[in-house]
Image (cartoon, rainbow, N blue to C red; front, side, top):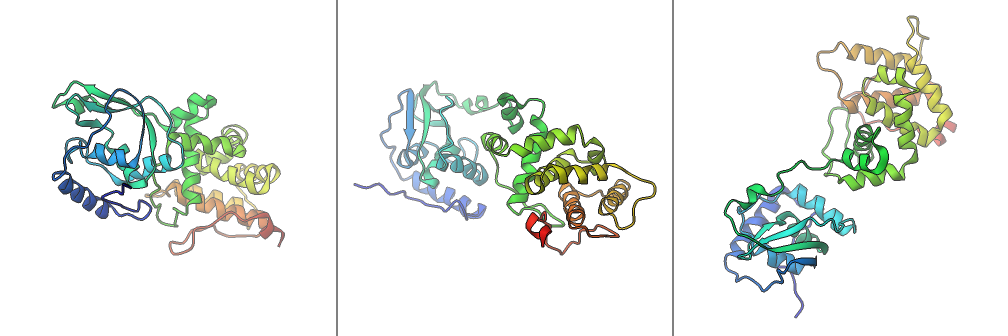
Length: 320
């Protein structure tokens, strides 16, 4: 007999409200079901969606943390992408057969349809307060993953730049707001850094050769992301010209200079009651750089609330 899940939910479009309703519906159904036979012997397992449904029958809603949709989507993306590794972090059942740790993992498997490998411990002595002792350590961050991969001196900054890059690439920025980004795993950040050679170079240049420009822009991670984009699109020579000119603050700036206009915006922002947010600073940098590379003269750099968030001009546009 072919198994089909009792409940389904499209994780790519599901709302929090729809997910919460599914939890309630599942719990009402769970109470009418008998526990299914399950291999709860200690050892490595590959948990399938069918097994996950059976495990969730052993996990009454409210017995542990209430499942949250962002975490489930986060896990499901890794499982579906083949990025769920055998770390040894186990699924935990007590000696009465109750699921004590792995609710989010099981929901991710169940709703995504993706199996995942895991170690299972099935004989932990039962204790009403057992959950209070599970996962109460410090979680590892993206910076931790970068540091252990040999990027210790740059880890924190690289992690921050990747965060900006992912928001930018996924269209999360508007002139006035920053839309939320799905949670990104440490391995995704590490892979991004490893795949983008110019990213590390940009961070090093902003920390060293272009310190003066970084000081003007206030936020080193924003400056490094801009440098990374310029390197990617226009190369080192153009980056050097822009950052060198930006770092040279003059009492008598050239009229119409995009870099002087950007310097003025940042100086005024330093005295503002509500300074610009990072993505707004980035928007001004993009506008200034585009004018710089296109040879345009500007009196003022501004980012209007209702305008489309700017993108870096391409060499093709520059040639035109």
